[in-house]
Image (cartoon, rainbow, N blue to C red; front, side, top):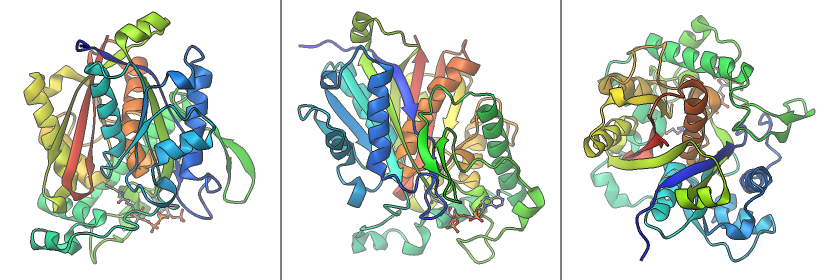
Length: 394
Ligand SMILES: CC(C)(COP(=O)(O)OP(=O)(O)OC[C@H]1O[C@@H](n2cnc3c(N)ncnc32)[C@H](O)[C@@H]1OP(=O)(O)O)[C@@H](O)C(=O)NCCC(=O)NCCS
């Protein structure tokens, strides 16, 4: 029987994230499966020592596996003309879908079931809108209020309960954009982003090398004056929310012994993962418990973690997670959290983001925190699931 193994990250890539909009999205002419196919192809071009038939399974997350995203991991693979013999799992768990895919892949390598896998996530929130085709069980409404579970409503409730001010949320969003601009202009995303042919709003064609939503300039007064689309007199705005986005992320994961045998170098391994559930009406605070469980089981403390990637579903919930866990300053600037920007600036294609933050964490750790041993990626999800992943330098 196989022994327990270590799982290392050999490569980690993503498409640039585009606005999910029928007229304004730079990747509007691509389907979500096209985005995944671009990454499948790029992964084999970047890693010529492995062939498609060497992949033992695909684990792909998507938050809404219907329409173009139905069984998308497999169908994109088939559409690319890749071998029938490679099986796949398309995984759905709202926003943590892509992270669940990486966790499932890592665990199957660690138990010895597999040695070479691809795992990732994908979403196009225009082609497959959030909640499309969903038919919720009516009995659920005995326990949760329907009007309290849409994502924006949860962000408003978190802001109210934890008294997060509009000013602090605005400054959080400004920091996210400013850090993303700095990282982009310094070429920090170069190793992770696979450029994709796109179309600007005016129809001109170009090679899209960076995330579309990053705002080069933010105007604090203008942002403070924006109204909440979620609640009459509310405090959460488009500027302090993650935007509707399309994108894909993909990781090449191997058992350490297989990577060594093939002569691959690697810097980080998957160390541990945790999941937590919380009240769906405050789903954004889920990462607090996911992180606490991870700390408890591993014996680590927030001080042991060199860098965090926290998915910025909304500024309100991100600030509460940072403050409750005391993992960084209570307000920007942050030293450990999202120093290359987060989802408010980079975008949040639901099922992609859990994988994307691991991709960015791996690159950020290597470039900016080379001496740190541990990094954590974590995120909340609709209906109150949350996940956290710990990576360790090898
Ligand atoms: C907030 C939300 C409702 C806005 O959606 P929308 O009204 O359809 O608008 P869009 O996202 O297309 O655009 C919002 C507008 O605000 C603008 N905007 C965003 N941030 C801004 C800022 N900092 N300053 C000025 N304008 C800003 C955008 O540019 C856009 O205007 P444009 O079309 O002129 O460029 C939507 O983005 C949303 O639902 N976000 C949350 C998604 C979600 O729930 N994800 C899951 C989380 S768990």
